[in-house]
Image 1 (cartoon, rainbow, N blue to C red):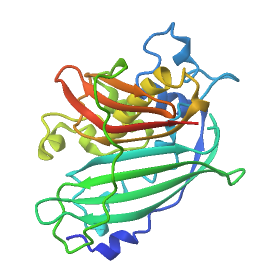
Image 2 (cartoon, one colour; image 1 turned 135 degrees about the horizontal axis):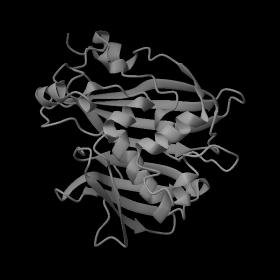
Image 3 (cartoon, rainbow, N blue to C red; image 1 turned 90 degrees about the vertical axis):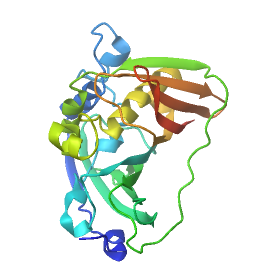
Image 4 (tube, helix red, strand yellow; image 1 turned 45 degrees about the vertical axis):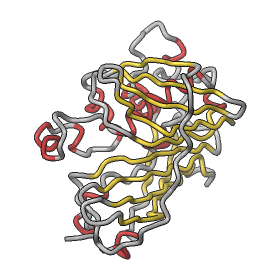
Amino acid sequence: MPIVAETLLNFPIPEIRQVLRWQDTALYALSLGAGQDPMDEADLRFVTEGAAMQALPTIPVVLGYPGFWLADPATGVDAVRLVAGEQSVELHAPLPVEGEIIGRSRVTGLVDRGAGKGALLYVSRDVIDAATGRTLATVDQTIFLRGDGGFGGPTGPVKKPAPEAEGPPAITLDLPTRPEMALLYRLNGDHNPLHSSPGLAAKAGFPRPILHGLGTFGVVGRALLRAVCGGDPARFGRMECRFSSPVFPGETIRTEIWPDATGAAFRGRVMERDVVVISNGRLTLR
């Protein structure tokens, strides 16, 4: 059934209460490649329990996550063909390693690009500390509905991305992804079979399962944490970007960085294919 704009704009995304364990915090970091070097103490603090353990600053993207709610036929969305379009996370308070989390998600916009051109769906989620009621982070996402469009929905407004940097990057940092990374990353709660089923990936037009866009986001976030924030999560404020092309698990992501007074512009590139996978990136420091 086709999208009904009013229905999708007001779709009741369930509120999620999540008990976050230190093991979940560690799994998120491990699923992004942290800990591959057992001697790298900068990484070990994100995967090892204890008083010194910290959460990676991009972890709010999986906290209070409502699951693959767009697979519900009532949304009218072609769930097989949707992909991540843009993503941001903004931190408002120090992130816990464990505790109870509330996730409140809502649709904030819908853009019909026309028949055969797909649609853009904007979704926002507040990540809240259940014990204090304090908002820890805000997660915003643009989802590109490749299989939809032409349903008579609104034609704007369209969110403007951060400007692209010019000239050669001042810093580059290469981080490998592992062949099984998508299978690990889905344990964070995103079970879209596009990332695990060869048959469904082929049906969606890909030669093999692709890495979650948020997996790519997290790998680049690790690079920014190290190269721009000096490894200190407290300096990590807001990260936003556009997804330009998928990553296949096993490829190496090079993060290209242009630092400035308030943070950095950045871009992600897959080295094996020389393809830009993340563009219009901006990190703002706290």
